[in-house]
Image (cartoon, helix red, strand yellow):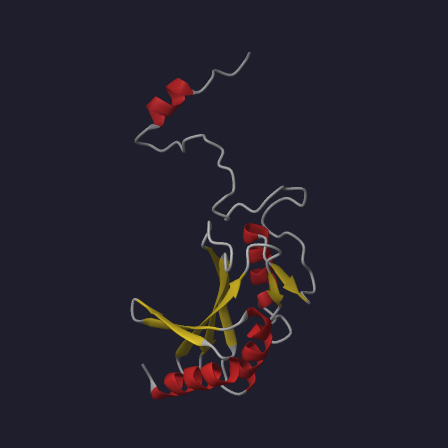
Length: 170
C-alpha cells in the first residue's frame, strides 16, 4: 500500500473515529453514517480524490443494528489511488446524509441504492426510484425480499422448466 493512502486512512480514522477493516488485502474505513458527508468533503477537498467510482450497499440480514453497510469507492486519478469507505446503517429507518453536494455523480448511485435496498439519503436532490417502476413495492436487493419462486430458465434446464409451466390458453 502506498504511503499516501496510509496517511489518508490514518487522518480519516483520527478525524472521524473510523475503524479499519481488512478483507482480501483491501482496507476499508468504517465511518459513522452521520459523518459520511464530512468525510467525503475531506477526501475530495484535502486529499484530491476527484472521482466517486461507486456507491453500493451490503445487507447483513437478519442482523438489525447495523443491518446495512453503504460502501463507497473514491478514486484519485492523478495519484492512481482508490480509497474505500463503509457506513453502517440500522435496519429500521435506514438513512444517511447524501454526498451529492461533493460528488455530483452520487445522484444516480444513491438513487440505485435507495431503489434496491431502501436506504434513504438525506438532502438528496431527486430521491425518486431509478430502476424499478414508481409504484413498485419493496426493495429487491434486500435479503428478506420475497422471491418469485419460479426457477430461472437456462439452456441446460429448458426442457424441464418448459414441461412444468402451464400451457397458454388459446
